[in-house]
Every structure is written in C-alpha cells, then in structure tokens.
Length: 474
Image (tube, rainbow, N blue to C red):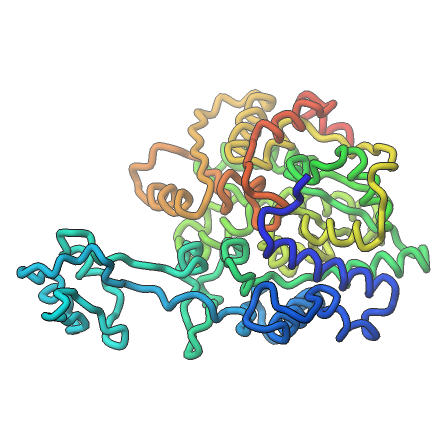
C-alpha cells in the first residue's frame, strides 16, 4: 500500500528515517556525510541539475531534522538552495492576446508596465515595473492576462510568503500561522518544518536507561485515518515498542474540553473554539478584536496532558499528530509545562521504520477510552457536535447556534461575519486545515479526507456519553 502522496514526502521520510536510525544507534556523526549518498546514490541526478546539488539539499533537510536554525523562531523554514525552480509568477500575457486596437490593458496599468509589439500584435508586461495590481487583467476582454502564483504563495492564505532578493521564498513570521500548507504544497520540498524527533529519542533513551520517569504518547484522534497498512491496535503496540510506557488518545482531552466549553458558552453567550492552534493564531493576528471570545480552555492535547501530569508529575509527554502548528503550541509557556515535544505522523513513521519494528507480527493494544464525541474532534463539525452533546448532558436550555469552518479561507469568512453585530451564530468552530485535522499537513496521505473513518473510530469507543468518558478517569 502506498504510504505517501508525493515523492517530496517520500524524500522527507527517507531523511527522517536515516537521521533517526543513526541517532538511535549513536552513529549519526560518523555517517553524517554518508547519508546523502545513501539517499541520493550516484552518479546521475534524478531530481535536480546535478547529484551534488541533490546531496547538498539532503544535508539541509538533515539539519532541519535535527532542529533547524535555532535563530529562526518559526517552526517552518525555507531551504533556499532548493527554491530555484519555480517561475517568478505574477501577471503574464498569454497566447489568448489578440493584439486588439482598444489596448485597454495599457490604459489600465498605473505604472506603464505594458507595451505593445506592433509587429507581432501582442502585449508584453515589464516585470521590473509591474506591481501585480491586476488592473490589466480586469481590463482585458479576452481574459488573456493571467496571474500565475507560485504554489507556496497560492497555498498561503495569510499572504505570509513573498520572494527575497534571490527570488527564493521568504516567510513573514508576523503573518505566518504555521498551518503548514506551504510545506505540503511546495513541489520541490523547499519549505519544511523543523523536527524535534531527536529530542524525543533522547527522552526515550534516557528513560529506558535510568527508569527515572515514564514517557507517555498522546495521539491525535485523526491517527485513525492514517497507517492503513496495519491494524490500529498494532500501531499502538508499535508506538509502545519505541519506548513509550503507554498511549493516550487526545480525544479524552477533547471530551473534557467540550464539557467545559459548553459551560463557558452559556456564561459568555458567544465563543470561538480553542482546539486548533492555527485558528487561534489566525484570530490573534488578523481578528484581534475577537481574541477575548476565544475559549479559555487549553487544547485537547494540553488538557489531557495537564490531567496526566497532575496524576504523575514526573512523567514526560509527547504529542503525535498531523499538525505543524502543534510544534509551535508546545513552545508556549502555558503548554510546555505539560507537553515536552510534538511528533508528526511522518516522524512517527520514520522512527518505527528506523527501529525495524515488524508491525505484521505485533499484537494489538488498546487506548485509554474516550467517547464518540471526543474522537470526532478530528474532523470538521466534530467540535460543534460535541458541544451540543455536552449542553444536552448538562441539561442546559441554551439556544445553541453553531457554525463550523475548515480551511483558512472559510475561517476568514466566518470570522468576518462573527465581527458583525448582526451575526446569527453564537459558537464558531474553526479548523485551519481543509476537512479538519484529517487534512493536516503532516498526514501520510492527504488525498482522501474521509470523515467516515473518524466516525467509525468514534463509534468503537466504549464510553457512550461525554460524562461517562470523563467520570471514568476522575
């Protein structure tokens, strides 16, 4: 079964696996210069202009797999040497241009960037003068002028990506919400998230050696849609084989959040969800007037981790999910005291394979049980359903009017409506990725965002109500 959507993901996985294998075995420093040759064997290049450039880019990926540039606060970095194949983009005149006499495009341009070739009867745009205002495209009656955006620019919904003086992608941290869309959409893998995988391996190795603290894994419920080549129970066993004492589902934290958010909603009258760190960051950066309406609950990950540390203070906790922005969330002071690091599904796959774990022979293990409502937090609409159920279980007569928005474009439109006095809803569920967490940038596969897999996983929960799930672990 195909594990990844693209060769970019496959290459990223190979680098992560080699780094993990070398770090586990204590041979990484000795093999550091050899790893690029194993990943990109010579003598002919397969992806770039020459094999030397391919190996140089692999070395950059290795540095990101080891935590990246410590002077860059963002958890996403641009590999400049890999960002040189995309055209500049912007407005261009296509072959639909008829060389018309009206020449409305020339008159519409405020910078005089358009000229007309009277021999070939074709308009041309001077890129040095063009400011990409789009007035020429609006004026053209043949739709002959098109705006060609780079994939990363097109993917970024906050306009955080531009080009630097070398024409490589540049990220504006003041606008970036770490959604990771650029990471997945870049066809050359020139934008990548930092990995803290080796920090996690250090914790696991130290725990195994000293036995001074237990290490727990908290997994996002969207994990039920991934790793389809093995049974879900075998995957839980494979995670334990890495050195984790046990595996807890963030869905139990989601049950706690839904129950508390229902109470907070009744108290305040209008609320936005706080589960998705990308959505929370988006509100704070682009709709600051609504910041006071963000639920004061921690995310499900942090909520269940807080509960776990209250019961076992010396525990170390690692979150595993499809999300890049979680790597930023765990750096927040109010979260880092509960969760040490975040692993993505891609990094988990690399660690399992680096340890040569034979998943086919593994027995199945079970998770700490949550309710159906906690598990469906993984897909769009799940939080709203869970809050509705919590209101019902609390016997509330509050008139509940929720709206669900997935993907930043939909979140932007919903937040614009939420800013109006005439808004017709009182609870806004926002998720930065299309489809919710099942569309996260670090999923192994993104092509099928099937919410039925999440619902199926939810229906397998033993707890039938939110209160039943929470009461079990009080």
